[in-house]
Image 1: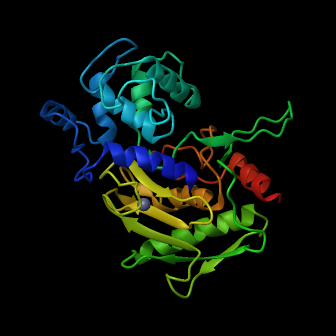
Image 2 (image 1 turned 90 degrees about the vertical axis):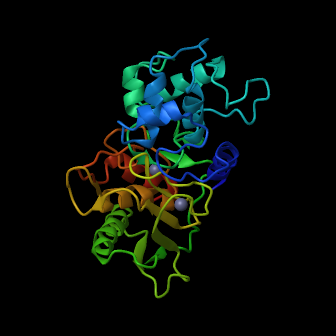
Image 3 (image 1 turned 135 degrees about the vertical axis):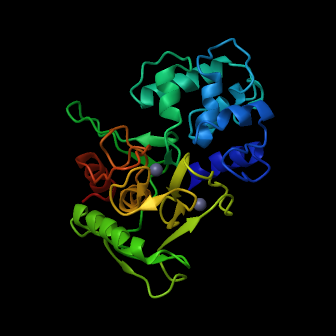
Length: 309
Ligand SMILES: [Zn+2]
Ligand SMILES: [Zn+2]
C-alpha cells in the first residue's frame, strides 16, 4: 500500500485530467495522437521516441519518463537536482532508470530506448510497480530467488488464515468459477495455511473483486484496451480490480486475456507478493493474450517464505 501511494502521488500530479480514452494522454500533442492510432496499446506513444538516448531532447521523451515513474524505476519527486519530468530532455536520471528497467527484464542495459526495450514496454501488464519492492535475500549463496515482497513486507496477520472474497455488482457469473479455481490453487500452494470462501456480503469480505473502468477512485486510473490489465493492493487492503475495457475470457482465446491467469497474479499481490523477475512465474509483470499461465515454483517459494510455511 505504501509503495502504491508514493507512485499515485506522482501519477496524479502528472495526470490531472482523468484518462478519457486510451489515446488521450492529456499532455500529448495532436501529432502524437494521430501516429498512435495505428498502435492499439496506450503505451504505444513510446514508439515515437524509439532510439532516443542521453543528451537528446525529442518531443515525447516525457512519456518515457512517465512510464518509468509509473512502474517504479524513476523518482523525480525526491530528487530536486533533476529537471522537470514533464520536459523532453533525456537526462542522466532517465538513462539510469532505463538501464534499471532493462536489467529487470533481462534486456541488454544499453541505456537507450532500443527496439527490444520499447517492445517490452508496450506489452499489456499489471498496473502494480515493479520496483520499490524489496528483493528477497536469504543470504544463501546457493539459492537464487527472484520473487519479491512489498516494502515493509505487509502480510495477513497470523490469526487471519481464512479469507473471504466477494464480487462487485454486475460481476459476470461466468468469471466466478475461474476465480474460485485461482483461490484454490493458492490455498493448495500454501498447504492450506490459507483457505478461501465466498463472503456472505460484499461489505464483509476480506477480498473485493470488481471490474473498473478509467479513473475509478483509487489513484490508479485504468487506460482502456491494452496497457494496464488489472491491479490489486497489498495486504490487508484486499481490493482486486480488472480493467473492464480489456477483452476478458475463460481459457486461451486469441486476442483476449484469461481471467483465471490474471486472478492468480493479482491474488499473489493480495497475499503480499510483489513482481518476480522469473519470466515463467505468475508474478512476472507482463501478460500475453491467447494463453493461460499457472503458478510456478518461484511463486510458491515466495509465498511460503513470506508466511514461514
Ligand atoms: Zn502485478
Ligand atoms: Zn483500481
